[in-house]
Length: 231
Image (cartoon, rainbow, N blue to C red; front, side):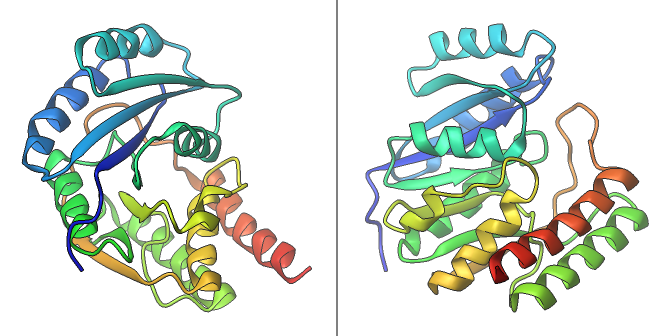
């Protein structure tokens, strides 16, 4: 154990967040000043229909450690993999910027710096409503049963891993299923994993895209992923 990383790359997919992504980057920059290694932030424009690209380009001009990428067509998985491919760090992180507080990001990254031989991921303990709690529980139980996983909160971010865990650099799912694929690859490759409990429910802005339809697609998607792995 111990600090072995010289640069941490933080991938932040951006989807229609022009009204608050500037505040997020500013808060992250302030919070990550306490991180004992250098860091970069990659803002991945993910099929935006607003002014997010212009805002992010201005942020890249303002902050030396911020870069902006464009990802088309839209998709959480596509944005994550595009950001990871462009990242220069030897410790790699991706997270949902609309939901991740600066304190939680710093906490997970500090764990990753202290334990550079493990995957570190968030395990969110509180959700906004009983519907989201029930839906998340069902999805996590499904994934645990299908893929023989021991961890919880499959979709929980931040997720951080060392670059030498190279199988995580070749994820293929273009949408929300990338997080399930991430956990499956860790299980298959025997990458050790530590889960950090997160209790924050703050949302920076925007609306959640999770509804009954998207939840059903994720339940079916997990089964599809399991079936493809068997094949």
